[in-house]
Amino acid sequence: MLVLRGFSRPAPRATALTIGNFDGVHRGHRALLGRLRAVAGERGLLPAVLTFEPHPREFFSPQAAPPRLSSLREKLEMFAEEGVALCCVRRFDAAFAALPAREFIERMLVDTLKTGYLIVGDDFCFGARREGDFAALRAAGEHHGFGVERTASVMADGERVSSSAVRAALASGDMARAARLLGRPYSIDGRVVRGEQLGRRLGFATANLRIKHERPPLSGVFVVEARGIGDDADDPRRGIANVGVHPSARRLPRPLLEVHLFDFCADIYGAHLNVRFMHRLRSEQHFPNHAALQAQIARDVESARQYFNH
Image 1 (tube, rainbow, N blue to C red):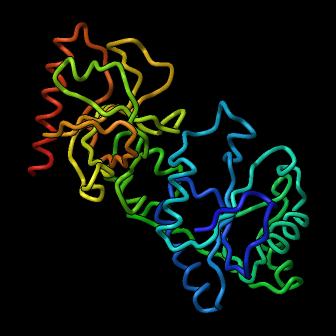
Image 2: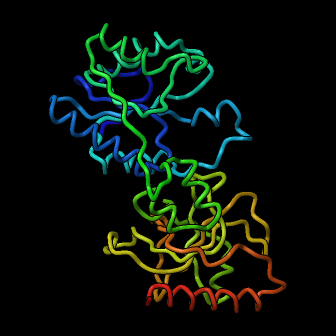
Image 3: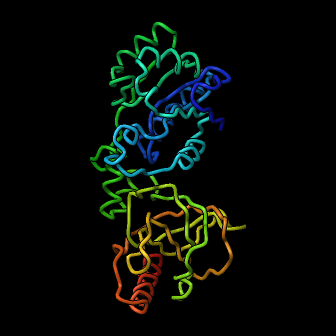
């Protein structure tokens, strides 16, 4: 997949385009991307996505912005899996936020992305003060010669699929609901880095993952599957994971993802793992001493093994 930054380079040829933040790339996003692939195939266009970094809500109100479901790297990987051939990542800054809707259409859609067909979600708005809407896009399409289509929301068990709904499910520990909305278990990618070796001293060695999420959308202890290890990179290894700040040890300045893999002992520093969260066991808690923490981890491991057995 070709990745472009801003207005720096034009698309190599005419595109079938969709636009959005696509946080989490949930079932609604995937339905839209599936339609994009179909239209691109029918019309001989390049399937393309325009997305933004940072998320607009992080730019306008960073303290009130919701936690991200996916990093930019994770999002790009999922776009590629969905058959996207070109992704344009536009930095969302003050200049872009002030861009009038008409200029957005001419600079981004026409000049840079050579839009031949545009597909947007049913709640899409654009331009300064969100002045651009579907009617404006349709009029622009008639003027510049590209088709415009709007997709409907996707429902799951009577609930509208959205990034907000996924965040709510993760925050409450309802991993089954999150998986229904996403179309897969929720996952976080990260590179294994050296930690303080507390887990090893307790008899439960952990892989400490450096993650991009400043505020992960979930916390606690989970049953997990991890991919990305050596020759078995696509074969999941089972284990438990903690997402949190170490209330029983030296409190961390930002959350850390620690993964203990069952029946595994190898040096995997530097490996890039994908950790899938299958089931929530408990919230993160403070323990009075290492013996109490060690006993609870043993119970967590047993609970996780029972989960997989059943």
